[in-house]
Image (cartoon, rainbow, N blue to C red; front, top):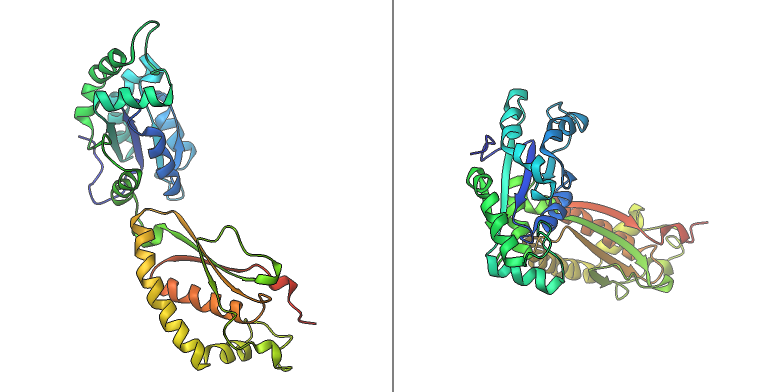
Amino acid sequence: MANASKTKVPDIVVITGMSGAGRTEAMHIFEDLGYYVIDNLPPELMLTLAKIVGINSGIGRHLAIVCDLRSQGLFDELLDKLDSLADHEITYSLMFLDSSDEVLRRRFSERRRRHPIANEGEDTIHAIRRERKQLAEVRNRADMVLDTSKMRTSTLRNKIRARYSELSDTQLMEVYVFSFGFKYGMPVEADILIDVRFLPNPYYDPAMRKLTGQDKMVSDFVMERPETKKFFAAWENLLDSVMPGYVSEGKPQLSIAVGCTGGQHRSVTLATQTAQYLAKQGYQVNLSHRDLPRANTN
C-alpha cells in the first residue's frame, strides 16, 4: 500500500489505471483542485519534477502525475520509484482507475479511438485484457481504486475531492458575484441572474445621483428600505437552497450577476451584500462591478 496518510493530503498523487477508465477526466479534476498536473510522465522523472515544483519545501503545490503503459518499458519502474520517494520524505498516493472490459471496449468504439497499446492487427478487447494483466501488480498496490464503469463524472469528482483536497466542498467552488447595468447588456456568462430594478432607485435623489453603491449613503438607502429587507431575506433563502446543489454537483465555478438599470447604485449594493453573505457561509467569493467604471460620478 502507498505510504500516504488517509487523513492528510499526499504530496504526490499518481494516477494510473486502464486506458479509457477516466484518467483524462481525473487530470481535469486535479487541475481544478489546484494541483500541478502532468500527463504521461516516465516514473524516473517523478522525483526530479517534485523538486522543480517545490514539493516538500513549504512553498510548492501538490503534484498529480499520470503514469501508464503508454511509456511501455519505462512504466515498469513505477513501483520502485514510488518506494524511493519515502527516502526523500515525500508522501504519495497511488490511484487506480478501472472499468469493466465491456465498458472499456464500448468507450473506444464510441469514440472511434484505437487502444493506445494495441499492436498492429490486435483487436480492442485483446488489448484491454493484455493491459489489465500488465497492470495487475500496480492495481494491487493502489490505495484508492475507482471503478468508473457506471460512475457519473460528478461522482468521480466528488470522490477525488473528498480524498485529495485540503479544502471543504464549499471552499472548492469559486463564486463570482458581480453587478451590472441592463442598459449595457445582459451578461451571458452568468449562472444565476437577479434583477433588482424593482427596488427604489437612489438615482432620483440629487444627493446620491453621482454616488455609487459603494458609498454608505447609497448602501444605507437601499438596504434600509422595507422592500429590500423583504427581498434580501428571500434572496438569502434562495441561495441557501441552491448553493449546496451546485456544490454537490462538483461545479468548480459559479457566477452570480446582480443587475439594475445602470449598474451604479442598487446592483452594486446588493452584489456587495450577496458576496458578504456567501463569504460568511464559507464560500470562496470574488466580487466585481462590471459597469461601475461607466458610472456618472462627475
